[in-house]
Image 1 (cartoon, rainbow, N blue to C red):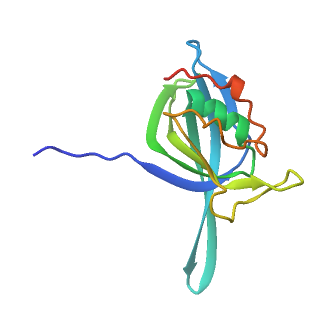
Image 2 (image 1 turned 90 degrees about the vertical axis):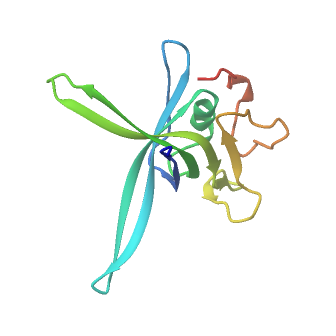
Amino acid sequence: MATRNLNKVMLIGNLTRDPELRYTPQGNAVASFVIATNREWVAGGEKKQAADFHNVVAWNKLAEICSQLLKRGTKVFVEGRLQTRSWQDTDGSKKYKTEIIIDDMIILTKKNADGELEDADAEGTDIQFDAGTAPAADLDFNNFDLDLDSVTTEEK
């Protein structure tokens, strides 16, 4: 019998800082950022809260879009897979980092008339991007300051 595997992550949270955009020596764009997710529970009749912080990585077109549209505090939905990488630091210790490599991103925050971020509460205000498609040319990006000319179409 064949063994089936699944590596899928879906998160809704807020960026803790602006995305960092870099390019590999081969010219591939890579953006990294951290998403905070909050959780609540009751223990012993007392309400408790905690936040978890998730390292997120986007590649190529999606990386460039993330670096242009996302800012600290933006609420987003991301979908992708977990990946753990390892390396040796300068003192010889082995280090590990688990990241979410995203394929899809939906912005759940919109800008109001003053340019301030606010939660998108009406249907149809979300804007979705994925790693396999370029943003549609007929979308209104006025609230997001997107420079479509700088988005490349190279794939990873």
